[in-house]
Image 1: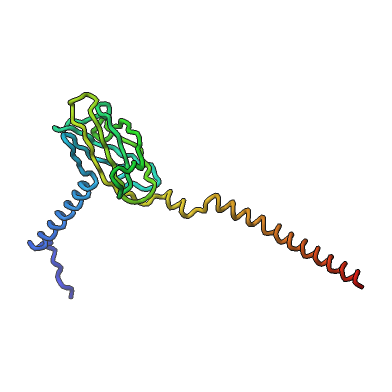
Image 2 (image 1 turned 45 degrees about the horizontal axis):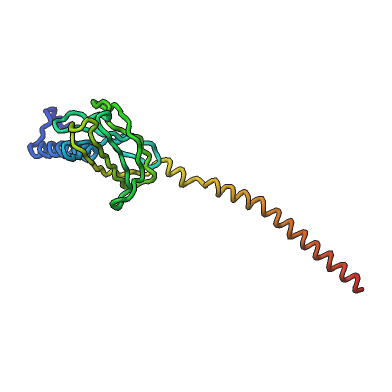
Length: 210
């Protein structure tokens, strides 16, 4: 005889409901924190900016990366590049005060998301590690906003190009190996000729003595 099957609705206890809600809330918090860390807002005087790095705020060494800055003045009005004498300087971290910038990529006006004509630049980070991106600027029209200097720290991961270069022997090494390979037969030939000459000399000397 088979036991009867209970076809009633699945019931979840209040304790389990609380656990599920906490898990969902935790996931939302983690997602929000990740976005906040990736899109940190920096403020200087009456100017603020958020940095975005393509792709997905995860730059890789040796690969071309586009960085752009959502630059706004107090009140939320966007500052396009045409209204700002902006410069971008990139330093490898840590760096000393007064140290020259590692990179100074030119800024260009770009369109990104809902922003029009904001400053952006193509950057190729030479190696993995931490870098500081320093965006500074002055208004084209005096008084529209105050001069500013914004600093962002970015972590660069290892890129495919770096891996390829490290695993591939250099051209000089290949040339050196080829040169050594060609030189070895010539060295042996020289040794054989020298040995033959010495042998002939000894034979002739022995004949003269006899």
